[in-house]
Length: 504
Image (cartoon, rainbow, N blue to C red; front, side):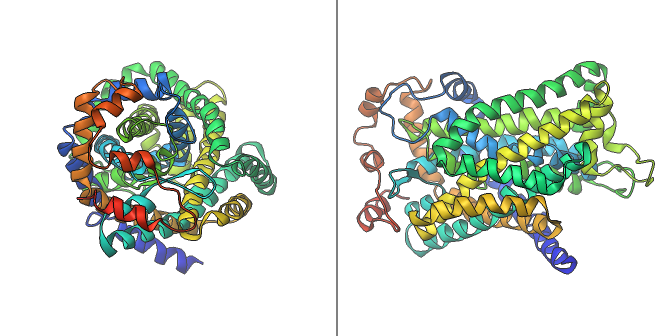
């Protein structure tokens, strides 16, 4: 098992290294940012208003299974997880405070990628045999790109995403919950596994509507709970905050020699771990959030694309920043573990920072409870991602067995050592991102053209369904999108032909 973990770790290092996925992720995000005219900066306000305040399209006739807010919280459920606690600590512990800067950069340019993939998720979504909307890279890569290339990219994504969901979206999350509850409250791992399995099955067998209802109530509470505690610490250490920002910006371009076995951390390490952990946290460019976006009730793909874009802002610019600043201002990032004489491990770093910053044992409890909530929500979100890819590969009949199997695997994750699974998960995450990023680049012309036309006519996202119909009339692909596509276990040949005429 150790040899397998080493091999998987080596492969993962190549995929997430400075010569493959990192430049592809940053390059794609920057390219889309430029082509879309910095849309994530100029339309963030109206997107937040639509997603968080209005929460759904004004028109009751909008097609979809769940509200825009529920689609947003489902995507947040899948992304606000251990990466926001342990992942941030890992990036800063190895790459120094400058790694947080590169997590910000990844998030900001990643918002353009997140918008684009969510736009395409809605633009090319279908209706499955049970009448539910289904979309994501496993569909839009094939439907939006002509010929064998699109089919290969779509199937590659579907396979990698299905495998990834059992790792990063299931076993690793359950393992983190069980380990923390055992260490903090002496709860046996099998007890945690049993409870999580039952809770998961109760929610997951109801499908996206059940998941959407749970995440809409659960996710805002868990984020406010965690961010509120972090803000308390930052206010208590307000004098250290300016210096922390200064160190972040300075170290981003010089690197920092971290303490305890990580000496010699240079700029390339800060960039590599900042970008890798940033993507691990917000999943921009991976294509996963497009699957949740495709289920949203919306009157136009641009509207849901903008709402989905705010997920990266909330995840990285708010939650990740809070974690990172707490770690830096409390000095946890270079704290020496008295037992080992080494830098405190990433798994303990955030807990130490919150314990140091809050009175009594509150900090330790908040991090434990926060991690439990974050990880459980990730299980819910990733089950939906997995089932939509199973539906694409095997048809609707395989969805319910998948939900049951996914719930049972949670128990395995809670009660098993998972070194190899963590490495396998990192590898699958990277592999599912590659076909999606290639597809975003190929279809960027369509994304830009349709986005510009829509925002020219509805810059404040306030148009009614009838008004949208009026200015979209006779626009290429509009009639096909409205009509949708009803599928069984495979694509409708006729509809695929129609859509192929609308690609670039």
